[in-house]
Length: 329
Ligand code: AQP
Image: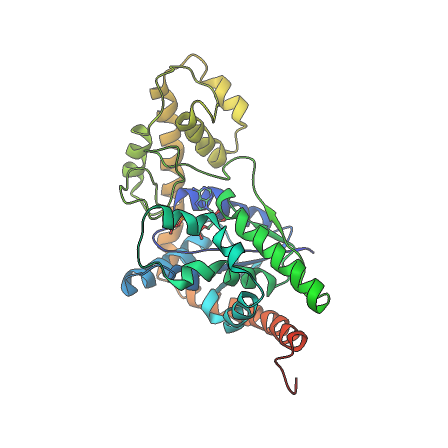
C-alpha cells in the first residue's frame, strides 16, 4: 500500500477551505493508502500565537479531524511535536537547502509583501521542516491545496539533491491536488484565498462557525454584475467559488449544478449553497461536540505517536549515518 502524509497548522480555527482542500480528501484516501495525518503545531508558532488560544485550536483541530471522518483505526493521527525526530531532521535538511530556494517561497514572500515586520527566522525556514515532516515517513503522496504545492516541490528538490549527494535515502513524494476545491477563495474578496487569518471574518467560514452565521456569510458573498450563472473562474470568480463550495460538499458535478441554475438569479443559487454549508456544519459540529471532551483525543494522539515515532527515528538515524554525524550507530 502506498503511503500518504499531510498536515494542517491550526493557527486559528480550521476553515471550510481546510476542509475542502485538505481534510475531506484525507478522509477519502484513508481506505486506499497508508495514511499519516499530523497536527502541525510547530508550524503554527512561526507566527506568534496566544498560548491559550493555540492550545484550544490544537485540541479543536484533532476533534475536527475525527468529526470529519478520519478514523484512528485506519489513519495514524499525531501531533508534530510529539515526534521529536521530525524537528531534528528539519535541521539537517535546512543544512541541505539553499537560501535562494527559500527566498522563492511565495508564502514567505506574501508576508514580506504585506509589509509585515519582525518576521521570524522560523517562518523563513519552515519549508525545510515541512520537507522533514514528509521525508521522515517516506511518503509517496502528499495531498495539499494549491497554495502548498510549491512546498512539496521544494521537498522533492531537497530529496533528489540529498539522494544524489549521499546515495538513495528518501522516497521522492508527489503532491496531489483535487480538480474541485483545491483553492477555496475568500467570500468577500474572491481574488484571495480563504484563510484562517482573515481579519475581516466575513470572507472566511470557520468549521465551528454557528451554521446560521455561516449561511449569512454565503448570502453576502461577493459575486458580479453579469447576471448570468456560469462556472467561469476568470471572469466570475466569486460565483465560481460558491459553485465549487456546493459541489465539493455534495459531490454534484459542476456542470450539473450550473445547468440547474441556468437562468436563475444569484440569490437562488446562494440560498442553495448556504443550505448545503449550513447542513454540513450542523452535522460536523454535532459529531465534534460528542468528541471534543472525550478521551478519544488523548488516545488518538498517543496511539498516533507510538506508530509514527519509530518510522521517523529510523529515517533520522539513516540520514545521520549518511551525513556522517554519528559515531557509533
Ligand atoms: N482556501 C483553501 N482552499 C483549499 N485548500 C486550502 N488549504 C488551506 N486553505 C485552503 C489547505 O489546507 C491544508 C492545510 O493548510 P494550513 O492550514 O496548514 O496552511 P495554510 O494553507 O497556510 O492555511 P491558511 O488558512 O491560509 O493559514 P494562515 O492564515 O495561518 O496562513 C493545506 O493542504 C492547504 O493547501
